[in-house]
Length: 328
Image (cartoon, rainbow, N blue to C red; front, side, top):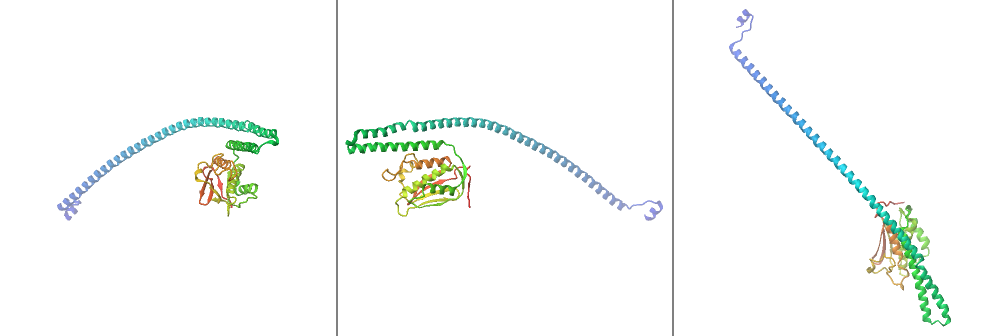
């Protein structure tokens, strides 16, 4: 075949080689067809994936738009409710302001009436008791003198009670002047002005800056310290301690005679006394005043008996607007 190829100038292939080449060509053609089929499948799958992706994106966009529309609708609904609530609150606030104004006018009228109209009969009783004693002269029986003295004494006591009631009413409605004050200086000023010669030693351990109406809070501490001193007088080893716990609690502690637990509910009532007139002086005004001042500052005042000690506790942290700062 090499000679024949040389003669003819063409390459002659042996039949066996031809068969092998044909098989190779057939295999190559089959591979090409398989590759084309695979490419076609891949193109189809890619098209399906693109279509699914597009559909998914469109679905997400529709859902997102639906969520946006629902959110906008909810926002519009909330805005409408807010406007309604604001209008309702404005009306409610206006109603409360009118009610408070009416109450303030009534309290002012009542305090004026007590201050003037109620005092006239008391002055008349006091004056006519003197006139009666003068008319009777030296022939007045001892029993009559005692009765006239009792009339005048009760008239004077009634005047003190009226003064306390007027002050309590005015304290309940007077505007507050809230400023930052040093608590140590405030309590020490109360002691210097009212308890310089106290028969019972008083110790002070408070510190910090607090917003309050200073004249009213000085009155609060004055009443609580006076109460502690009064009921500790004559008790062996008596002492009054004013102590602070953390930043929100102040205790006024004494080891005096204390009070009966039966009076727990009435101890802050105006004119309520926990001891008889023959035991301790007072008209049952001080604790009521202290509790009213504390309430106006959104503080909580409590009075309890713990063993041999009486504790008046002022809780300062009942109102979120309170600003208390530790110093030193």
